[in-house]
Image (tube, rainbow, N blue to C red; front, side, top):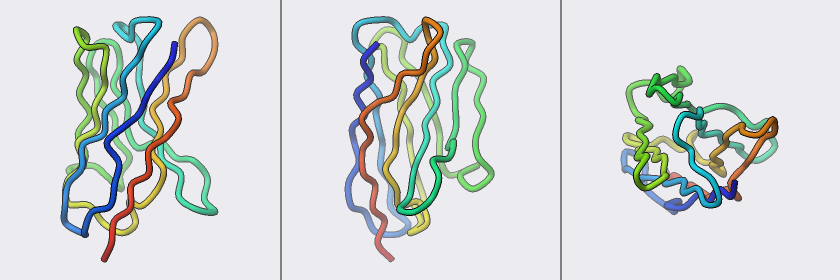
Amino acid sequence: VQLQASGGGLVQAGGSLRLSCVASGSTLRGYTVGWYRQAPEKQRELVGSITGAGRLNYADSVEGRFTISRNNAKNTVDLQMNSLKPDDTAVYYCHTFKYGRDFWGQGTQVTVSS
């Protein structure tokens, strides 16, 4: 499975971005996909996830602002980020666990200016 994350960029506080994770080589259908982020000098943390059945889970810090959705036909999982804050600045990664191992996308930088 190859995961490609895209959509990052520079945005002012209060703005929005939409990240997309596209999978190739294998389907994401039926598998949990998570979005993680890692800020400078901080550990990678889970932003949210969507199960194969569509069950959603979010970190408290993004609840109500971020929304994860999946499109099985396109083999994508998106992260819609609204009301962005400077604390959301990080490299964002998508992840799935399949065939008994972890797969990570390459990361996309999100920078929120104050």
